[in-house]
Every structure is written in structure tokens, then in C-alpha cells.
Image (cartoon, rainbow, N blue to C red):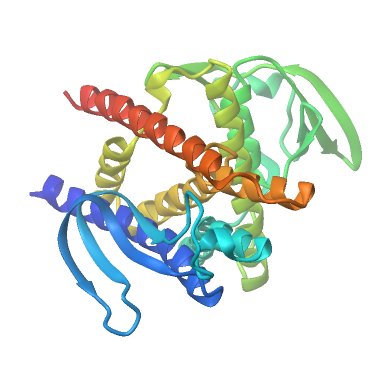
Length: 342
């Protein structure tokens, strides 16, 4: 019974993220006077729909909770209607295209603030103590404040954690402030372990906490959100370069499974996962790839630089091909997710 409840909660959470993303596109489109044809949550056959008598917009709920869309006139080709997206000023098109990811990023930051407010977890990058059998204690000391790793500045303790976990499989150069002096500790070694076929480093020390307060929580909200976005990009680069195989990628089925498992741990872990996935959704949709918002934004920026309209048919073909590839990739990822469950 707990599993069923967890899956339902997971689908609901996933649906909220999709709804907010599409709501961003929808609101921006209406404000920019772009003609909206349909606002849908989910994909596949319609479960429920109605058409607004005032605007003619179709609002629908579809069978598969793995996506959604705001269908706008003139998205993928020429259209004589002045309300078509392709005919709106370029700055308005950018707003409409960016609005979906903006909503996910904004929601992720707000969820992060609520999470920190509820848990009161506010930390620093100062080392408090080491775990038993610590490896890094041969270089690091209690009281060290970590300010950079491999020359990259650290924004907060989650940034340190994420960087060590991903990059610490190899020796790291860590910059610390020790007794008021900034020094570089070369080739710091961390123990490693394998998790779901991926080798990661083990953080073998704890950070000092800070007194929670509204200002410190607001600051931590910003730094943790930035650290999470940095980790998403770093993970994406490692995926492209081949460090992470397909086992390191999850699609809708895998995401629902993770959220479902988290529900047994309470509200706070689910809220934190919601934060991560929401920020991840916002970042991924801004990648300059065909069929994604980022791909459409790229075409619009090229038009602005060239100061002339690109061929809408060619752009439409590019996005159509990108959508086919994206759906194929999602199908492959879904197969891997299902295989993990068997």
C-alpha cells in the first residue's frame, strides 16, 4: 500500500513540475498576445478537455504524466496570423520561450528556501571533524575553510560535497584558509565507492553548522541553488564525455521511482528532491538542442544577431527531427529504468 501511495505522490509531484513549466509558457504567451491553441498537462490520448468559449483555447489532461505542452500558433512554420508566435517581436518570443524554464528555476529556489526553513540546516565550508578511517585527514585539518577545489571557487558546503563526490575519484588540489593563511593542498585523496555502476568519492568529514536565521537561510538558498545548477552542468558534461554510462541517467519512470522511495523518509527529503528535479528541468530545457526551449531560443538569438528572419520551414524541420530523436532517447531511457526495476 505504501508503494502505491508513494507512486501516486511521485506522479503528482512530477505533474506539478510539468504544470508549472507549461504555465510559464502559457502566461507569457497570453501577456505577449501570442495565440494559444491548447494548454495540456500530460501526453498521449486526452482524458479530459474543454474549450474556452471566450478565447477558443483547449485545456486538456492527457493519459501519460510524462510531459505536457502549450501549443501556440505559428511555432514551427510560417503563419499569416499576427498572433502567431513566429510573427511576434523577437524579444517577446524570447520571453515566451524562456518562461517555462524560468518557472521551474523559480520554483526550485522557492522550494529550497522552504526546505532550509523547515530543516534549519545551515552550514559552512569549515571542517568540523573527520569520520573514522578518514583518508583526507592526512592533508586537511579541523578548522580548515575550503574556498576552492582545482582552482574553482566553492559557493557553499553543498558545492564542496558535490565537487568532491564527482571529481574526488582522482586526487584533488584543495585551497583552504588555515589560521588566516590561504594555502593549496595538493593531491588530496578520498576513498571511493561504486553506486549504481558509477564510481564516486566519499566525503569523510563533517562541516561546521551556522546559526540559522532568516538572512542566513536566504543566503544559503541562493548558494545551494547555484551549487545544484553547477552540479547539473558538471554531471551533464561527464555524461557527454562518457564517464557516466546509461546507468547514470533516469527518465520519467526512474524519477517516479526515486520520488516514491523518498516518500517513506518524510516530507523534507521529498521537498529537497523536488528542488533538485525542478532546477534540473529548468536547466535541461535551456540546452541549445532542437525541440527544447533552448534550441528555439538559439534560433531566435541568431535572428536577432543576423537581423533577418530565418526560414521558418527549415527551423520547423530541425525541431521536428529533434523531437523524434528526443522521444527515441526517452524510450531508450524508459527501457533502462524498467530494467532496473526488474
